[in-house]
Length: 96
Image (cartoon, rainbow, N blue to C red):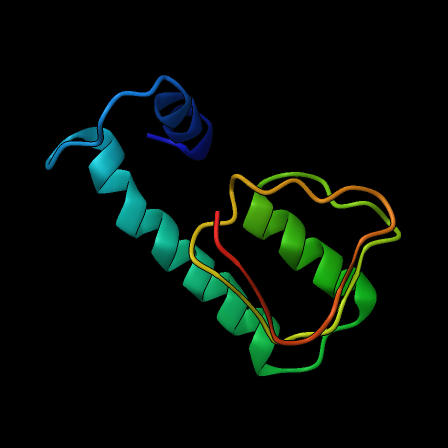
């Protein structure tokens, strides 16, 4: 199961039961978010690198005017859409 399929499953209103594909997807997605946010938070990145990492994290293109001052925290991030001219200040966490 991928992120889009997981989001569609959630939107359907069905329960996520133990052992189902949606249930098994959640810890994998959390580990991916942890891997990328650790990379974001562990060293300096140019604004271009931050945009690329956030695009990888969200699975969606990030606008060229997006800016962020790490650290940044999240547990999933595939259900967040970043619009144009977005600035995220340091120490923010998104729970989606």
